[in-house]
Amino acid sequence: MHCAAEAHMVALLKSDPAPQNNSDISANTMRLRKEVIVPDQKDFQPSTLVIHSNRVYENQSNSILFPIHQTATYIHESVGVTKGYGYSRGANPTVNALEQAIAAVEGTETALCFRSGMAAISTLCLALLKAGDHVVLPDVLYGGTSRLFHQVLGNFRIEYSFVDTADVDAVEQSLQPNTRLIFIETPANPTMKLADVKALADLAHSRESILLAVDNTFLTPLLQNCLDLGADISMLSTTKYIDGHNATIGGSLATHNATLVERLRLVRKTLGTIQAPFDSWLALQGIKTLPARLAMHCAHAGEIAVWLENHPKVARVYYPGLDSFPQKALAEKQQKGFGGMLAFELDADTEDSLRFIDALKLATCAESLGSVETLITNPATASHCDLTPEVRARLGITDRLIRLSVGLEAPKDLIADFEQAFAVVFGVEV
Image (cartoon, rainbow, N blue to C red; front, side, top):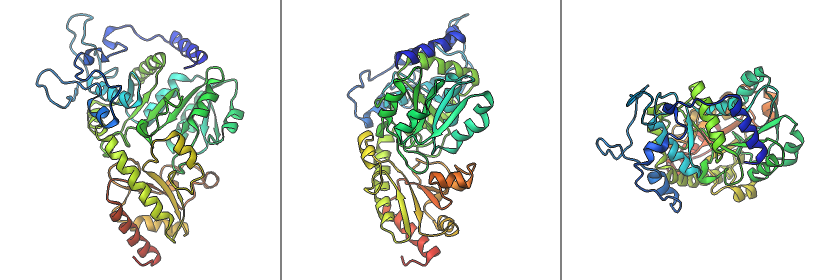
């Protein structure tokens, strides 16, 4: 992190010092790391990294799976002496095990896990911002993040501007003397529009006290390492690809800056936004298959995107791996894969587009993404329903836009499902 931003964080910490109780130690990984069985992970490939990085055993039974520490509190060995844990609102061994696994794929010393992706973003904003500060947000943005600023943070006099973050010049022109954070999504939900992470990081760091945070949920660090590209903070909704099985709700934040980590840890403990132990344990099992799943998601999504683009009833497909995608060159520059997410519009009116979704039998109409099941949704009636029709139309989120999270089912079977839905709605022969 650049010096001015570091000074800004130090000032925040001085204004609200963290407790010095040793039951809330800042680096609670100390006890776990005594049991690390593979200490050197710098040369691991991703498939090895997610299984063996910072791996620990529990001592009582040598269970191959790290146990669920489903507890609210911890016994003090004597007054003021603990094993590094005092109360699960501050830290928990199972949560910490997931944090170390996520840190391994982020390439950081540690990561912090939260009750949800929105809990992670909310904690980040409350840790960094104060009344009068300004935030730059992308014009195409997940509806929950937009609601956070419109309906919550705005009430505390936190200022914000929605900007086309694909245009670095537009972002630069939107910066103000009180700008403290540039928060982006890339690819953006749901239009897949990209932002140049390195260019925006360079821009942020050229100014005083501005940080760049990236919602990297659609790709994860394995397909796009935002911190390596220069971002200060990487945010994930672990509900999606990290878990991968629609079993948990969660979020994470990672950064190379130790001062910022401690600020986030303090605010998380104060707000009570830490992830629950059982959800952490389930997500810990999911992350072990992340590289294998991502490879299949990317391959299947690419095949489906090409098939859709060639279908006579499809007007347009939004997928960074297609030659028709206007930012494909940027995707190739900053991503290691094109991901499992795409969007498309049918050559049809809104009513028939929604009927097409309802006619599907294998692809499931549901919110969320990144799971083994293929999920399909209409953003205008789901994730972005709070936006006015005029705003959605301006951003390309039309009422007939369909978002597809391609799962691990065989593409041949998914295509057959699409064909039968086309036949039901449009009378197109299978």
